[in-house]
Length: 571
Image 1 (cartoon, rainbow, N blue to C red):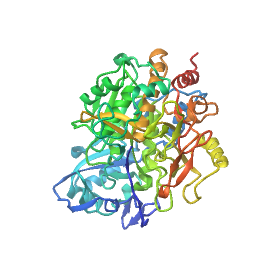
Image 2 (spheres, rainbow, N blue to C red; image 1 turned 135 degrees about the vertical axis):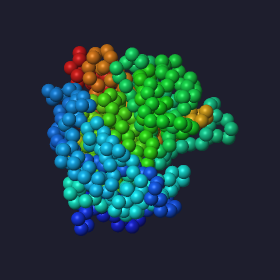
Image 3 (tube, one colour; image 1 turned 135 degrees about the horizontal axis):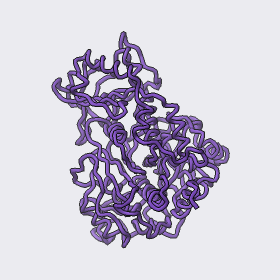
Image 4 (cartoon, one colour; image 1 turned 90 degrees about the vertical axis):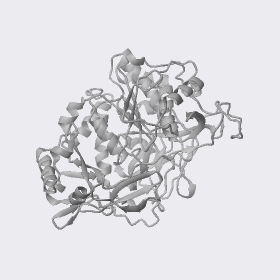
């Protein structure tokens, strides 16, 4: 799981979401952390006026309440609209900003000598306006100074202070991308390199490493595969932060660890560049998504550039008429790194993907409940109520795996309660039951018990073999769990779409949390283990039923397929 840790000892950031007026201009995102407040990022000089920079204006969209109601309708079994997903054009028409908003933003750009017709381009629904400008133009537009920030090999331009926009434009813009927020960096939990035999070269002691053949047996997938390139089913994986996969590594992994299961030799479509060399995170994501979701066409999205990764990726997805039925995303940041305006807008963007029939699966994080002073630090996007969050388990103790042992929660698996999103109604019954019956809870000030709780589900996330740079490595983390779970959901979709000409599962949470839904009937409940909080002390414990360590538990393919067929009315 790629996670940027933020420990704010002097938590002096503004928590209000309201814009602050500054004369005839308005300060947007007053609660956004600045680049200089982020750990380990340092200023290496002021940006030069002629340097090129990217700005994205997130125009305020229409009919958001209707969009959210539509998402729940098409995602809830028993609703007359269940499975009647919207096409991209329908979503675009629904949320398209008002013409007044377009005019207001374009007037603002023109007043600062930026021509929207020459240097800017809209997305299909005109909800984002992406502009390539000079630093001088960006400074003039936002009345802010830009500096160059560096961390390791990454160098970006960001605003030195909070930016402002003209008052007449402020009501039409949610935020401006490219002023704040830094690229996410790969974190993950890696073990030392091993030989292919797992016991040579002075590596760790011999143990049972995780590999696709074990996962397929454990989760009752066995020899199930997709329909191949003739399929109408697609799965997708998103990569950020200079994380790349290698075709040769994928081939070696499949030959060594995927057994005789039919699989495709490479991704079917690459969106964005993949120049390499290969890295652990991307290798893990591709190899396990394509081995568990075997023989299913896979699209790989790589997002580069100067913007934050989530914004770049979601703009790409929003602009495509066809997108995968499942996305596996192994990245996340602590919620406090983002302004409330940004979080709420991204929440809407996830709803727009879900209403098209796509399942968004995000890793729940590798920092447990997190710690920000004496409070938790929930992981976003996993904490969004419009995505499905995947936690991590182990069979037996990590480092001493036992295939016959039951799964337990791992301390690093992200889980808890959002600080930003109210609890969705679909969660009320199970979360209230957890809060009533939990024998041990952290102190009341550590978490917000009224908000969105996560994760929703889990899968094994310890001691995974992968191949990167030609070497066999081992990794732990929810980066292992999410492609595993995603591949199994892709197999269910493959049966629905190709065998029964039905629609895919789409946004999973209403089906998960519905009484008698797949959360209670098609997953293995995890009963032991915990998620760590501050000072590595246990925060939340696994228990019978849903809990904020592993959600409803881990997948069982036959039961998931049976539940999906029942939900779709297929007998």
